[in-house]
Length: 358
Ligand SMILES: Cc1ncc(COP(=O)(O)O)c(C=O)c1O
Image (cartoon, rainbow, N blue to C red; front, side):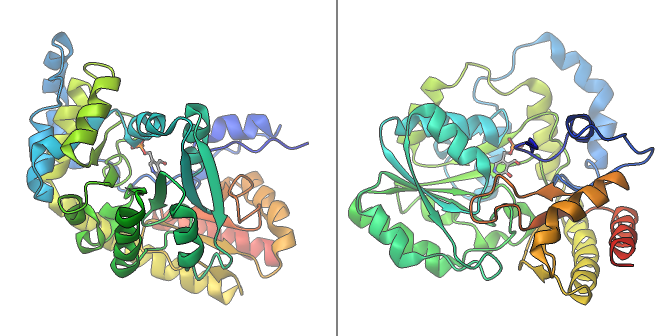
């Protein structure tokens, strides 16, 4: 039985796992980190960071925490900085031991893993039409009456689709009425417009928490940096559980540079947008179904979905790594996710797909 890894990236292990020879050149389109790399200012700062290895970091990740609060127009008491969004997800899940949490699939697989590890009772709902990505609102509301929390991923990983503010508000207001908290994971919101974010609702609704990751947009997956914006009470509760000095000095300094570099963010959005338009046109010309993504990855389905595995391995053997969807509930391996990377990487993907159809 083939064992598919539960995450993208780490392609060397992937080839080894499948017993495949590692091609000389590999384009990894299975993960979603910015293909433009890191903001240039970080490179300049790098030598001076050595000095920071000597000291303990600020326990509240200052001055980054205050900068985040200013950026999002919230009090700093509403901000909790984490060693990657993944750390915050792990600790947030622990609040729901023995409680009911709703997930809407297909979505980020780490939610279910962290919640189950924390002893939560997970209610799995599934969207029927992956490409259209319309949330089953009535079904969600029905479950909310009896649940403690609803997780939403916006824009959603793996589809890249956005949930409208109107729908978010409807679910948030319903959650307030029936006592169901709402966690909105905006790990990829930096790739689109801040107007879609639910952060401005956190002040008004104490049961709403928003998670952000800095690793995707700023190309810093290795340093681990994310944050959460929620009620001061929730931030205090989680803070008590987290390790002291959970965010290291390098991450704090690098995070400050990232937030100062709005130009880098805009250039990244523009670059990936150009590549995405080109890629979507190509996939449609191959009769694929493509998700309506607002971010730096998308999902597609082959005209004949039963060929998906074969196509996935064809790509691997030719040095193009896509993200399988075997462990995404509601996709069952019949879709593939592709990161919108460099023009060179996407041209290689196209060449490999052309070859498949030839
Ligand atoms: C939807 C989503 N949320 C959160 C994370 C965690 O991000 P990080 O720990 O790198 O900040 C990821 C990482 O892949 C993700 O895809």
